[in-house]
Image (cartoon, one colour):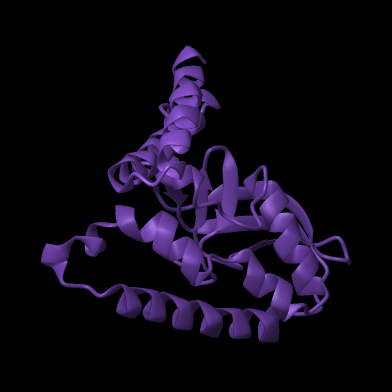
Length: 200
């Protein structure tokens, strides 16, 4: 914390000088404040490790501690025919833009794929899949037995994607079924988020 303390002391001095009207010193003050903010984040453990500062400032909403907990939330909302909750469980535009898109190969400038096209395509397909899901399974009450992934797990820099989610469930009559209700699950920092309802 010594470096942060020194920055605080210098910040106080610079602030007094800037208050006297020195424009150059005001510019230095702004730069110092920025440095202080970065140093403070690092001092609190925000630098280094597997995830960078940008990632920490781009949180995912509606995450779960395991694929099982996420699947239980989907099953509960499906039983209630709760389209709003189901929709909120999948990646939204801000999450896709700030967390996922920068690490996808298709985001590279030489690929020439606009973000709006990539997000629009994924979002439309996910919404269509969700409508079909509700029409087919809405109101059904399933107990989750197990969660597995029939596809590969793709690693990226700060997250990985588990593909082709398959659920073993038990219906109200005690029958065991295997169903594919949604597609991939994104894992980041031991948190799990539904990628989309597009079944891989």
